[in-house]
Image (cartoon, rainbow, N blue to C red; front, side, top):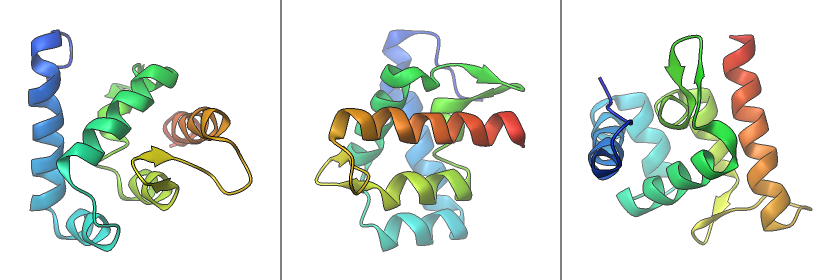
Length: 110
């Protein structure tokens, strides 16, 4: 289980998420397609937490679970370029909150 409560465990949590991404074929294919490394996962995780996804929905900690769920991982990585979340037609700031809202909505509905 990912331990996200202690600040010193943040790095370990990110590392564990990346290990899951590399160990499951479907997830590995997604991160390989988008050339995603552990630093990217750290940046995305921190962005999600900053923008409101650092919460539990139906027992899932959204910031980490969204990175190991194929549908939300694809959504995030499709809109992640040059080390930032950027939706076409939106500025960086708006993009971060838009993607976070989409991820939260996914977990509220599913």
